[in-house]
Length: 160
Image 1 (cartoon, one colour):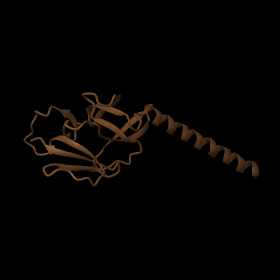
Image 2: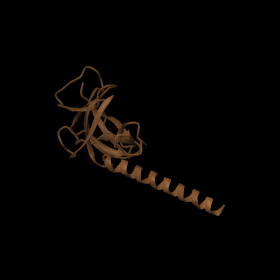
Image 3: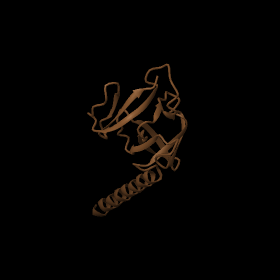
Image 4: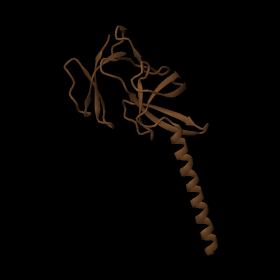
């Protein structure tokens, strides 16, 4: 009886060890929290690639890799090693003064020239400032976009 209990315990330990290793391996191949990424393709067939923050086409930064995203963040599941999935939380990683066009069901948000205008209010916004605190106060004509999980606010103006 004791041998059987020890055998079961060893089997459980091996199983937990394998699960822990495969989970660590999956996360180690995914973009790390704090890294910037470029998304290409469409929302239904996308690729994510690490990039240097501050690049001309770099809009997103990985805020978390546990799927616990703020409502303002894009949730993106990346497959690693063909089967393991890591759910990334992405938010804008741009300087003040940058203009962003909101995506839709098939397109990602993207950086655009601030000379580009839109007839649809809120489709293109210019980031005026990034404030500490999700309860930060923006200017009179600015719209706050608070991220409560990460405790900051983008203050934006409509570029219509």
